[in-house]
Length: 481
Image (cartoon, rainbow, N blue to C red; front, side, top):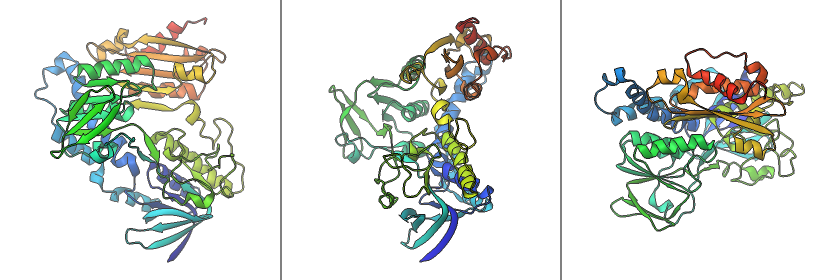
């Protein structure tokens, strides 16, 4: 049994863990990272990168077909095999050597195996051969193990060998018929991708399609999916699932409707990867989401730090803002926090302070790569009301813009902003339409900087671009509102 001592030990080598470790090393500390699967984590191999690669070819083809001159230059249909090959390249063909090389170059020690907390500041790593290595942390242990797909307790579902997001992202062929259980981001994006690749897709969404976004955005995506041949079964759910001896799957809904498909994708939510971490040694329940304070220190149910405050959690596992870019944002703040505390200096946790992850609560940006795209940041009208804010919501038709009509014939989309009427600042923005993702960062900057509405009038959008929607939203809101 070997012993190794580092300033910081990170469990989980996804983007969050990598950024924490890199941050503390850049700050002059030593770091070890523990990983039981591929270095690079879910985003690199089963989520962000391969799924967007699955979607990109179809989006480009749709964009070309929306322009009459370009349309005539396009012959044939999408090539699913070529799409899958490009997807493989973006997933590094599920080989993590490139990211391992980066870790070594950054001065971070890698230990492959399952990491478990065995005592204060102590992590035991069990490798594939059963060998145990003990790591000790002088300053901190960071849990960055993320989350995994949850399979709901529907009768027969687990026995039917369903796809989760991983199987959907890494499939080697396109099923003729695919059922998607769940109407959230993963379900919607994969329904979009597999429809474009030639599958007959059926969606079953108990809570409706994309229930957390503005209705004007989810409604447009639903209309587009139906126009592309996707069968939507909304506000209902499966009662039982059965895969027969020939591999076909029958899904029976609670209303008695039966659906026969070749594969079924479960996209109904996530669960924390905390079951086998040794959390019981620090007074926490295995399998639970981890709660953290403003410095991302793990806390008990009463809000006090676990043990004596050496344990932190960043990324999906703390459930604050389960998106890769927000996890990396947390990781940057946390790396700096650990270095600052190690030097005996107080940390700055004031809103928008150097060590605060304030954006997790006020300005989380997200792009849903559906057809059409949805880009949103901050509050929706419903969430602002639930938060007790006095707001005004205004919307504008993207198709009425000169820039949109130039971008594509028949351009259809909509944008909306949420204004805090007491402070006269933007607190929410949502836009839906072809190629709107790049509009999002302007809204993110406006919300995080708390730019007054009066000042936004002086941010003049270039003409003719889709960004002109900012001027039209302000005009709709009113100069003297």
